[in-house]
Length: 100
Image 1 (cartoon, rainbow, N blue to C red):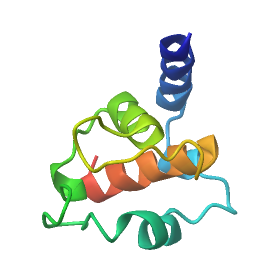
Image 2: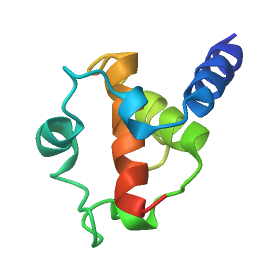
Image 3: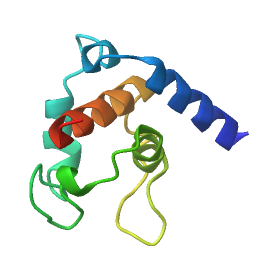
C-alpha cells in the first residue's frame, strides 16, 4: 500500500511541468532548507550528507528519501515534520539547484 501511495505521489509530481507549479505561494523551500536541511546538506559541497548537486536527480527517489529517510544513514524521515506539499516543494528546490 505504501508503495502505491508513493508511486501515485511521484506520478502526480512528475505530471507537473514547472517548478513554480510545484510549490504554492505560501511554501518557502529555501526557508525549509535553512531550518531542516542546512545542518547536513550544502547546495554545492558535501557536509554530513551529499550536496544537492550530487544527489539523485530522479524526483521519485528524492520524494521517497525525504518522506521516508534512508536506512543505514543519518537521513531521517520528514513525513511527520513536513507536509506532502512542503516535501514536493523541497524536491523541486533540490532539482532547481541541480540545474534540471
